[in-house]
Length: 148
Image 1 (cartoon, rainbow, N blue to C red):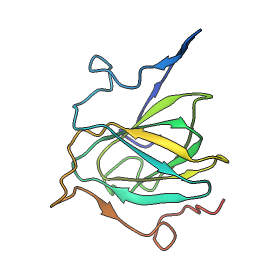
Image 2: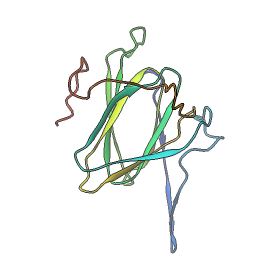
Image 3: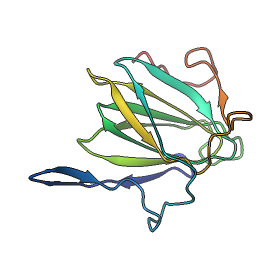
């Protein structure tokens, strides 16, 4: 496991009216700080990668469809330098993945329908000076092939 990555197993609570799932609470052991909450979607087969943050911690979960979330540790002083982690996120086995700063990440929609991801980052997105650094999903030095 990449150093600093944390996983929170989520629980769906069903009743006759529907379902409820707590994603992140301020009393969770992995909770750091609240910045904002946003959702993003990807259509089947679409890859949204690679990027990292210098300051922000991300907290990803998938609430519709299914994604393959992939992390790559580019931190030269990390014990897990160059390690790749893959996670399948969906409601069949719901979980929250916490991604530390400086770890590249991205995801691919692997379901037949559009996937919806919720992220609870620790910082508010700054439109004039974003804490977001991107590289091409295919043309890079990361030993990972999104085509699989």
